[in-house]
Amino acid sequence: MLVRTHGTVAEAEVNAIREAGSTERQIVEIALAITSITFTNLVNRVNDTTLDFPAVA
Image 1 (cartoon, helix red, strand yellow):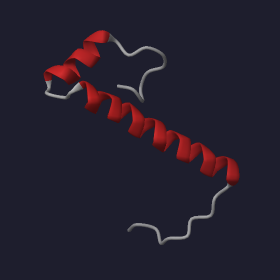
Image 2 (cartoon, rainbow, N blue to C red; image 1 turned 90 degrees about the horizontal axis):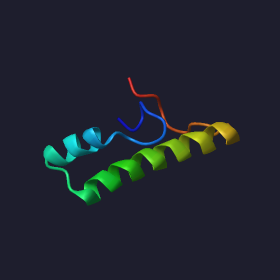
Image 3 (cartoon, helix red, strand yellow; image 1 turned 30 degrees about the vertical axis):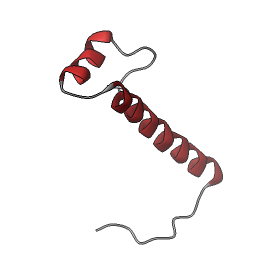
Image 4 (spheres, one colour; image 1 turned 60 degrees about the vertical axis):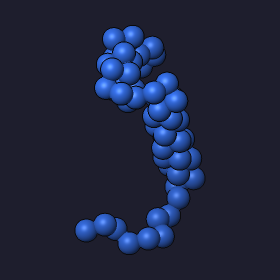
């Protein structure tokens, strides 16, 4: 949901997450995880970071 859209997430989609049992805190943590991953990916691309671990087979 957050990754597929730009801007505001539809209230119905957020309500669906709540109805599935997620708390407000968990919804914020989902957004934080996506933000952290996106930021890390952008920094690594800007810096052309060398991977120093073996590829997963």
